Structures are given as C-alpha cells and as structure tokens.
Amino acid sequence: MTFAHLDGVCALEAACFVHPWSRESLQNELQNDNSLFYVAGESGEIIGYIGMNFVLDEGYIYNVAVAENHRKKGIGSALIRTLVTYAKKNSFSFLTLEVRESNIAARSLYEHFGFIKVGERKSYYSDPVENAVLMTLYF
Ligand SMILES: CC(C)(COP(=O)(O)OP(=O)(O)OC[C@H]1O[C@@H](n2cnc3c(N)ncnc32)[C@H](O)[C@@H]1OP(=O)(O)O)[C@@H](O)C(=O)NCCC(=O)NCCS
Image 1 (cartoon, helix red, strand yellow):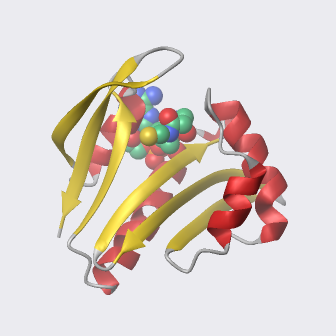
Image 2 (image 1 turned 180 degrees about the horizontal axis):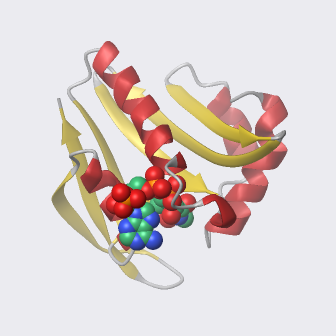
C-alpha cells in the first residue's frame, strides 16, 4: 500500500466499519517502519486491504476488509495469507487480533488459517457495545 491508495482504503474503511480509521491515522501508520499494509485491487479500484503492526517477533493485525460486492471470493484469505507468509519468513512467534464476537465471517476466516480463541475483552466495542474475541495464530 502507498499514499496513492489512501482514498480507496479510506472509502473501504468507511463502508465496512462503524468507527473507520481516519485518513490521518492511516497516513501516519504508512510511515511507520513497524507497520505493514497490503491492498487488493481490481481495474484500479481498491477492493480489499489488510494492515498490521509488529514488535520484534509479535504481529498485531489491525484490520482486514473486503468490499461487500467482492466478498466470498477468497480475497480476505489472500490478504491474510500474505501476512502469514511474511510472519513465517520473518520468524514471528505469533499473529494476533481482536474481532467482534458476532463477526462470524471474520472469525471463520481466521479459524481457517489456524487462529484460535485465546481470550475475550468484555464490552470492548461500541455502537453496538460488544465483547471482543482475541484470536492468535502461533507459529
Ligand atoms: C471478514 C472478511 C474480510 C472476509 O473476506 P472474504 O474475502 O469474503 O473472505 P474469503 O472469501 O477469503 O473467505 C474465507 C473464509 O472465511 C469464512 N467466511 C467468509 N465470509 C463468511 C460469511 N459471510 N459467513 C461465514 N463464513 C465466512 C469462510 O470460512 C470462508 O471460507 P469458505 O469460502 O471456504 O467457506 C469480509 O467479510 C469483510 O470485509 N467484512 C467486513 C469487515 C470486517 O468485519 N473485517 C474484520 C475485522 S476484525
């Protein structure tokens, strides 16, 4: 992902999340040497993106999103696979993330890759209030 993709990623964030990342936050993270972002595109349109932050050998997935009309075609899997490959190549110990308890699509996607539930954060999300499930893939 580069600065040229910011408009597309902001639009995707706004369409997919109640509390989307601001353009400024995304722009700052893009300049962070400890963050990594990938986009999926089709005919010049951004149809998916994923981002993570890492500290030494620990990877923290920020977000993954696929445009609604492009879901269930393997794009989310391709994005996760890219981070898993990067993590393995760089000898990470684990990749971890938080997800809304009711987000069955995302939880199934992560389970597909071997992420397991390792904990819960009560009432972590707002609008609506909901628990976060912590999921981790250990290498
Ligand atoms: C979660 C999300 C990224 C999945 O992207 P996707 O491109 O549709 O995922 P894929 O096509 O690669 O699906 C891979 C697996 O995920 C699971 N999955 C995806 N969508 C699903 C759904 N609606 N219901 C149940 N399982 C689902 C399935 O196990 C699927 O494997 P299968 O096709 O063999 O059944 C997408 O639904 C999305 O952007 N959601 C909104 C944003 C979001 O909630 N992000 C997660 C924040 S933590």
